[in-house]
Amino acid sequence: MYTSAFAVLLLVSCVAAAPRHMVHTTPWKDCGSTTVALTNVSVSGCNSAPCKVQRGSNITAMIYFTPKQTYASLTNAVYGLIGGVPIPFPLTQASVCELGATCPVEVGTDYVETVVIDVLSSYPCLQLIVEWKLKDPSGNEVSCFEVPLQITC
Image (cartoon, rainbow, N blue to C red; front, side):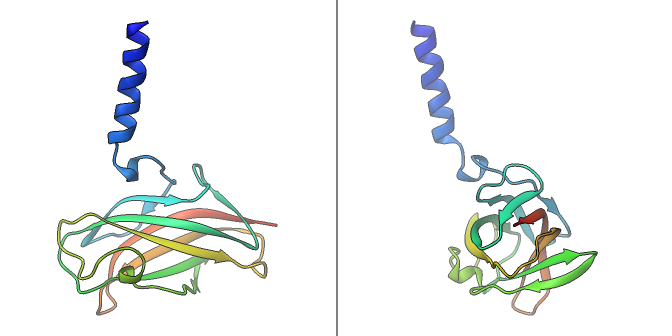
C-alpha cells in the first residue's frame, strides 16, 4: 500500500517538476539553426509525423528557443515546401515580441512563443514540409526547423 502511494506521489512530482517544453513534443528536425538554439516545438494535436490538420481549422504552435547572442527582436518566416519549392505562408503577427517573447531577446534566456495559424479551407489537401525560420533584424536566418504536415479535407 505505502509503496504504491509513494510511486504515484513520485510520478506526480516528476511530471509537475518537468519543464513545460518536455510535456508535449511534435516531431521536428533542425534545418540550420546557428545563433538561436531550438529546444522544442509543440503543435497542438500533433504527437507523430506527419501532423494531420483539418482544412478550415487552426493550430497552435509553441516554439521554445534560447538565443546564443542578444537580439533587439526576431521575426518568424514560415514556408510550405511543396515539391521542394518554398511557398511563403502568411502570418498575421511575425515578431516574437508580439507572440510571447520579451524583447530584446537576451543571450542564454529561455523563451517560448505561441503562434495560432489558420488553415484556410481554400488550402489544397496535400502533404508537405513546413519550414519555419527565425530571422534577426537584418533578415539573416538564425534558426530553422521543419515539421511534416498533412492538410486533410
